[in-house]
Amino acid sequence: MKSKYSIVTSDLTVKALQDSGYKSTAHAIAELIDNGIEADADLVELFVVESLDRSSQRARHRVEKIAVLDNGTGMDPETLRQSLRFGAGTRQERKGIGRFGVGLPNSSISQCDRVDVWSWQAGPDNALHTYLDLAELRNGLEEVPEPKPDALPVDWQTLAEGLGTSGTLVQWTQLERVQWRGADATLANTERLIGRIYRRKITQGTRVRLVPARGWAELPGARDTKPNDPLHLTAPSSTPPPFDTKPMFRPFGAGNVGEVGEERFMVKGADGKKHAVHVRASVAVDAARRPDIEGEEWPADISSSLKPGDTPWGKHANRNLGISLIRADRELDLDTGWTNSYDPVERWWGVEIDFPPALDEVFGVTNNKQSATIFSALAHFRWREEAAGLSWEEFREELREEGDPRLPLIEIVYYIREKLLGRLRSHLEDQTRGTGTSRKRHEQVENQAEEAVKRRRAETKPSLTDSLAKTTTPEESKQTQLHSLVETHKYSKADAERIIEETFSRGKHTRLLTSRNADSPAFFNIEFIPGLLQVALNMDHPVYSDLIAVLDKDFEGASRDELIDRLVAAANAFKLLLLSWARFEDEQPEKPRTRAKQMRQDWGRIASEFLGADSEDDEDDE
Image (cartoon, rainbow, N blue to C red; front, top):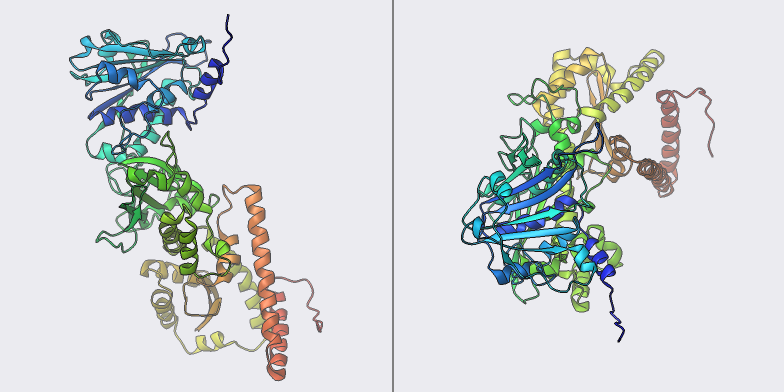
């Protein structure tokens, strides 16, 4: 008998199919929903059926079957048989959400040992049925079984709500690799994902119904999936109240197509033609992050002292962190590589990139439609490091000459990284200036400074602000402060009035705040207001971003390594600050250098008092 020398054994083939790279059970289920939507279904139903038995009294009922039913066009015998072949789908023309025809068999085998498919075009009683079984594949099955007439089981017909004269049902059994144990957990975790993936389709009228069952009895909790929009511009949506019925974000940016928050780029595809890519951005409305917005106060059951990120809607936003890639009205991926994972403020912006299937090769779309590898790799693209001294235009031309596959996306990446994300983060910083954690830390510093000021007022002659206070009424001082905070530092009138009231009620003579002043080379500015010494940290100066902001940001959620990195970065920034002063003195002529040295020593003596040094001994350092 002649021996067989197969390059790949059946067991290895099955193992490869099982490890086909789906991120979760929910992602695999999404492939089945894709098929229904591609078949023009307006209703897709997801059933998660628990077994009647459980292993112990305390154990949950285990998921026994998962099925997706649609009322789409159904399949003829040939199409049905082809649908279970790997790489032999019918939608390879790249016009819809399908891609390489691997979705149904790959997603199914990644989760179960058996998949059954019924499809009909003349009523469910006239359905055709075929299947794949891993046990048969291991034993050498080489062809998809020929579809046979087989009515859709009555139990499925009973559970279905929108059974049509045409449609398809895909059933998974022998669920060896399903991620969650019970029906409720499976549906809850799947709902978040498919609400996000199909948010546009759902908004356009497609229903995705979720049905928990035990045995063949429907359990309470059947529902339609609500849109889950990472840009939080859709209403109604799955966002918790009060933002379930109104947008939690607003469009951000001027836009170049006549729509606020939308930029369009023309990108050449593998077909040689240019195709439009739309980049949309959004940012949280004030009321999402602040409980004190008049007429938009937080719900009564949510404490106004709660951090915005700890609110139900803040936690929801954190699960939608990243840049959303939309392909043919379906989300491909939510790419978190563009975010600062340790920064809780990152949840409050959204960016969506919308491109057509004709640009699949340019973006690097994978077979299972779960990522765009070329685009995602550019999340860590630092063009200045690669350019090695070249200008942006010169570097771009070099990439063009080398035929670099990243080139078509470089303009988009440059816009997102160099312009858009910086503007979004700056806006979010400004949105809560004078509130929250950073304000509390400023108050701690102000309190310590106040004690030093009291000591110096008793020991030295009156300062400028002390002298001004003697000739100015408290009301006049308040008006000066209000003008400074609103006109110079761009605080809202309500925030400015609150800050001023806090200063007066606590009898403070110092105030620390943040401001933007890109035109100033100083990293802080001083205002001598009657009775008040006001210091404004310049948020547009590198000292602020590299030193102060690094330490002022919330520590919550940051790992030990991230905290160490932040401390090291801040320490390095402080050392560079000292070296920059040393260079400043070094560049001065002799007399100004002597004055600078004296100023440094005088400042050092006062710093000792403000920092609470134990010793007041001063020694010449040179």
